[in-house]
Amino acid sequence: MSWRVLHHRFVVVPLALVALVAAWNLYIAFNDHGILEGQVRDRAGAPVAGATVIFFERNAIYFQEKVRTTTDAKGDFRFTGLQHHVGQLEAVTDDGRRSDRRQVRLWFRAQDTEVAPLIVERRS
Amino acid sequence: MRPPSAWPRHVIMIVVSILMLIPFYWVLKTSLTGENIYAYPPRLIPADPHLFNYVDVWYLIPFPRYLLNSVIVSAMAIAGSLLFNVAAGYALTKDFPARRWIVLLLLSCMLIPFQATIIPAYLITSWLGVLDSWLGIALPLLSTIICIFIFKASFEAVPRSLIDAARVDGLSEWRIVVRILLPLSKSAIATNVILTFIWSWNAFLWPLIVTRTPEMQTLPLGLARFLSVMEDTTGALYAFVVLVLIPGLAIFLMAQKEFIRGLTSGATKG
Image 1: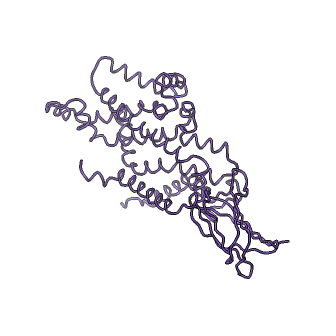
Image 2: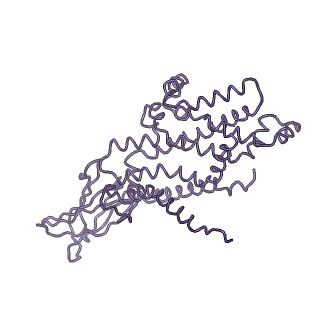
Image 3: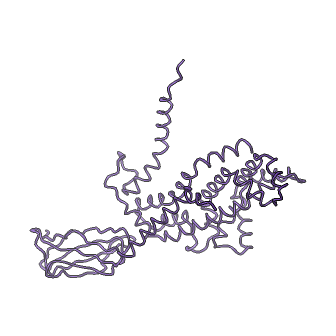
């Protein structure tokens, strides 16, 4: 068999696609721990400790609560083991302040992600 | 006298090409935005495009399984059709009793729509015990009359003296086909590959009938299932369509030259 056949587009294109898919799957393998982290702040930008952060998962029709966690002294929160590629995040404080529901869309299921800060404020 | 300028012809061809490509562009645009396709006035430039609809498709339905089924069925159909169509095409270049009648029979069979033969085809597939399997889905495309005639025309274009010389050198019939005829029939091979791929990739009715479990469904069946279970998923639906289209487009673009040449050859010499 001549090595020239390897330069044929019917060989090069599928091989390039296979390499691309392999590289993407390798990236996924190292970044799919289901970690979702971020910070909760108030309107002044100060971290909010003790806020409850709720993750909503999407089913076929609507979003429903899946899991919740609490921010630490620095206002940071962290979910682990999430197996979703789409969901929503919302932060609620004990004194009634809450954030907008933030849509979270990921490139693959259980992608490790750090989201932009959730801003809590009092709503009417 | 100066030759006429090519510009007007090119402008017309560019305009026609754009008109032909608009539906594809619209599918692609909708897959990137998810906007309502009936929105008025229609927006030509996508607003806030993203690729997350493709991620949704990947996870909302068992897309990898459908893709695997489609790829395996297409590969089996292509391999089988190459083998059987080459053999049949070569046989029809020989002189033997009733050859003319066999050619007429094949030509007349082309007039019968597949839908009319689907019940006997199903019974044969059942009798072979390959219902709900990759081979069962690929079975009707393992030999196609159009491709047999494409190979016949291509083989007949090879000088008889070349085949006689090969025979004098002691080559068997199969080696003549493999070593002499096939290397000279690349256009016919490309045409066979592309046509078989497109037919098997887009097949809906036969896979619908022959498969019984969701695990054996192919992409077109997945598309129908996707429509039946999901609501308000315009973007994801169009993303699914693009994902189904991409392999066929890629193969066509890779083999465009051979494909056109093979079809033209079949048209003029068949």
